[in-house]
Amino acid sequence: MSIQENYNNIKNRLPDNVQLVAVSKTHPVSAIQEVYDLGQRVFGENKVQELMEKHPLLPKDIQWHLIGHLQTNKVKYIAGFIDTIQSADSEKLILEISKEAGKYNRKIKVLLQVKIAEEESKFGLEIKEAKNLFQKYIDGKFPNVEITGLMGMATFTDDRNQVKKEFSTLKKVFDELNQLKKLETLSMGMSDDFPIAIECGANSVRVGSAIFGSRDYTI
Image 1 (tube, rainbow, N blue to C red):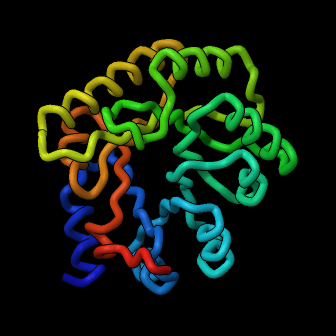
Image 2: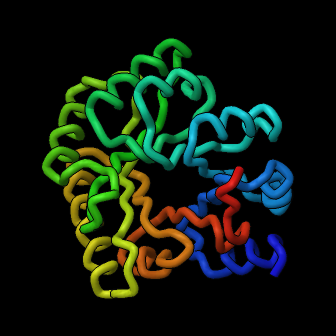
């Protein structure tokens, strides 16, 4: 199917309250523009370098989300324009985001990335760490950061019950933190598992290959 057919198919499957983050990593500017022209405004990239190359070539009203692991020394390159950093996985990183955002007199939206998968390769905060960081945020430790929610990735497995259990765990943490301070975004689910994520309470999903097709990792 074409990108347009893929995109419309995904949009038709999403409830009205669920945000679609179109994950455009490794895909060309022309493909992003095509999806933009269909009405999409929120795009996700994994790597700072690739995001910096694409950002100047595309419409300025795109809301860019950084969804990949972010090193502290690269925050400064995106602090002026990034809408949301979904992959905040340490206090050190959040402090750096707040510092760099302050230089632009702006607040950067952040999601705490919580480790819910059993795979060792996945980044993320332990649940207790996430709760402690959120309390520090409430106490005003990160003045130029707005923690708007949580993000998590389930284990890459065909076991739907395991995926459901992991997503449900993150929803529980989200609900607990939401009692302390109102949160907006629970980002769970990708091309393969977003229907389960929505079933478990996700209101933002990160979909790439189901829209753009398989990725070219040679670029």
